[in-house]
Image (tube, rainbow, N blue to C red; front, top):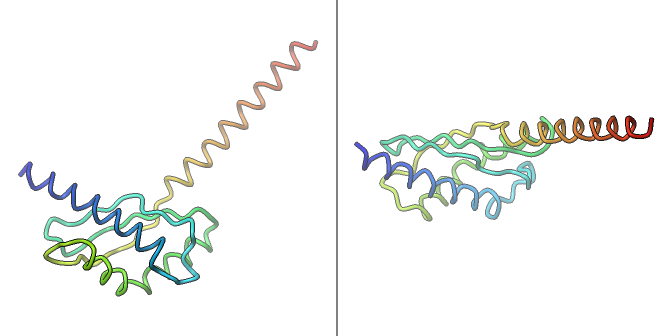
Length: 128
């Protein structure tokens, strides 16, 4: 059982790397944002299906357009994946929008604003 999970982890990493390469370099669809990254991949143990979590930096319209572009390029993506990753079956890919990077960026902005406000308050207290 343990060996299977190690193998599955290796496959997930390989598929994630290749999907990232295919999306950023091979697909020419203008709907797909250049700021698209593959955050995580979960390939089922039977290799028949795969969930690809993607992140798109941009507004909701850019995210929706990227998802549409990826779904329309599905046949091409699977063909490229079959060539580059040597698996018994090429999994059917489901793209899922992942908001974690955008969430992190927003949290960083909020923390920076709070720190700036605190620094300004400290400077005001020193002056009075």
